Image (cartoon, rainbow, N blue to C red; front, side):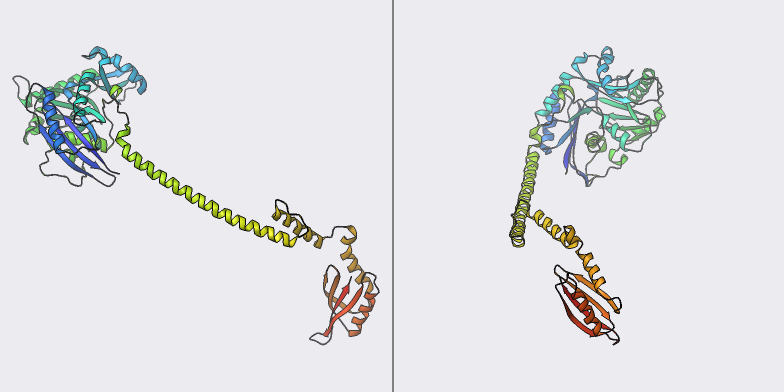
Length: 483
């Protein structure tokens, strides 16, 4: 499923926006706009006019907005607290910052990032940013008039440094400078972490743009080292921004500071894969700030965010109403189909069971007409079959249980031992006995018949068959003894 992500970078002198459509397969830039703001006393009017142009040129319906707040209106501090747990840090941080901030802490929204160091002490270095609530409220209300409600509000200039630090192959110690017509925003990367943000004027009285920038970079490094006790020597400086001008400025910075300096191009530096990029008329120095805002959402990069406390984003039913209703209808349809399938399967099996039950009852009545049918006819039939099987193998009373032995004993005693006879098979039924065998002569068969007829156990003895075997030397016979 794809979604549209709007990166919205707002400064006093310009507004830039990039709309990215992001999906699992690919991402593409749907639209982008850069609107310069003429110098005027009322910043809000200038921003409102730029947002109106933006709203007219870009379809922002359903997009997720990531916006920036001008860095020069935010207070940044580096502090150390004697806690490691995030919950405790949030509780104690306002009191730690209060003496150093220009506003009362209850009038501020504060966010921070932990700076991991090799300090053996149980202390935590923090990089903090604070914005006063009235300014943030006014900013969000201005965006709301154009139906824009950002899910993240972060620091202007900071997202470029965040993207390069997380997505590009750059030195672990570096500096990032975003330059606009009035302010420069500097971010420092130390041991792979952004530990510092500062904002200062682009020029100061009596100094050039280059001289002002280099002096402020050197002052920032010295102040940071004094505050934290850490040594910071950047291996590279990345510069960007609408006031960067033509190629050549970065070379002057490198010569002045004796630090390699290069012009940042976010798409190039992070090897960004977009279906339709590079685009005609795309200017990295003007568009990278807005592009970086969209990319931190696409890449899931966490950074400073002032949407907390009274400005925290609450999940709204209206935003997802259509999708939730559609999903609910689909789920209900699937559930209904499952229930129908279960019901039909139940009735089919019930009908089959009824047929089998009727067949069992019919067989029971035919097999046991004199037996009263119970609740479990199948069990009754099994029990009767077991009784018959036991009766045939081992009759119940003692007189009948000896009958087989008595029959064998009677035959053995009655047949004259002088007769040459070999019994090969004997089958004992309920009321008769069948004997098969062979003997020397036909007279021997007659003799055995006569001897067995004398036994009171046998009611009648019949010669069933007599014939010579293949050799002609023996007489095969069958006798039937009626019990």
